[in-house]
Length: 164
Image 1 (tube, one colour):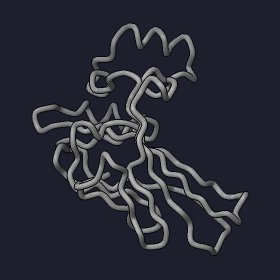
Image 2 (image 1 turned 180 degrees about the vertical axis):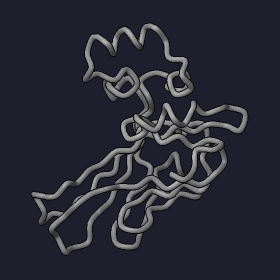
Image 3 (image 1 turned 30 degrees about the vertical axis):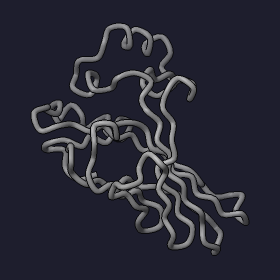
């Protein structure tokens, strides 16, 4: 929910025993996802995604057509925030989870974590999480309908959405 905290999980694996460098990046949606999340997707987006089931009109576009920025990086115990996020309550906790103190409207989008360990060429070193920030007055879709696709859809942060 708007102005509430969230923790975005980064699932990774490594065989290295050396400290990793963690970096979180933000990518904005290619087009507004709010309508679709509330059950009001545009007919154009529906027809395009039906033609190619592997293509997502909200996520699949060139980075040059959306906002891309570094949120934070962590090396050892030192966390460095990207320019856009300085002054906000944001840090990397546990091994690689992104903790945001207060969600803002502009936080909706796709978040990528990348784990770098120079001596591990085999591990799963990146993950992504979708985040959709909702306000108090907005209603979430019927949870019974959403439950089936939540693992593929965005993390909804709104009234009644539960923890992230």
